[in-house]
Structure formats: C-alpha cells, structure tokens
Length: 144
Image (cartoon, rainbow, N blue to C red; front, side):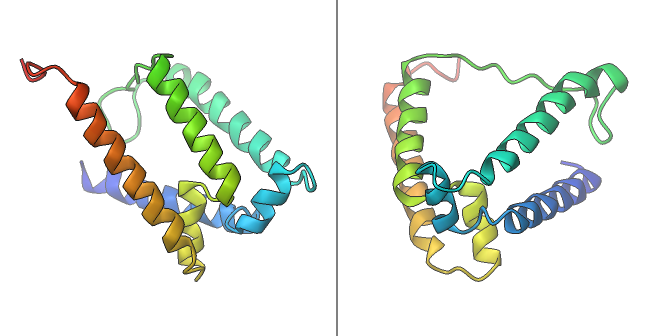
C-alpha cells in the first residue's frame, strides 16, 4: 500500500471514530436503548451513514476516472448464502446482547472505555473460530 493511501486510511479512521464519538455510538448503553426502541436518535446516524455511503458508491466511479491513490476502483464480490446469513445473524445477536459493534468498540477504547476490551476479545475469538472452521471446510486444492 502506498504511503499516501495509508495516510488517507488513517485520517478516514480518525474521522469515523470522531463521528462515532459525537453520535454517542461508542456507548453501549445508548446502542442498547436504540435497539430496544427507547431512543431512536441513532436512526439518524444510521440513515446518514447509509445515505452517504450509497451515494459515494454510486457517484464516485462515475465522477472520477480512478480513485485518488489507486489505479482503479475495485469490486467486492458478495454472495448471499448460508454462511453469510448465519454470520449476519450471529453478529446481530452479539450486537444486540452487548450493544457493541467493532468500529464503535475501537473508537470507545480511544475514548478511554477499557471495558470494551472484553467485547473486542470476544470478537477476535469469534473471528479466529470462523477462520478455523472455514479453513477446515475449504478444499485441499484451494491454492491451485
């Protein structure tokens, strides 16, 4: 990755974390009250983020011949299958029980909420287990 790309990623991450902090999404109590439909303020955050992302994904490739720091725009192949649906359900259950999502958890650590280390530890353990299971299911000739 080019140095200017790394700087852009770092600045984007700082801006994202700042936005999460301002929106109070780094506080699990606020997220849980949103998920219980007691405080719908985060609905504005969700709607704003989804709108900006959708517009960017649709408009950027049309307005620019290439990204600022890369040769071309990439495409991420996504498939809707049993593993995707199961992973999404498991992620949603974990988020609903803890009120913690990966991005806000990291931003919350930056704001001094050390209790989020437990949630991040659980996420890392889950990611490791998923990788282990996926590697056991993959065919032996995956590299060819």
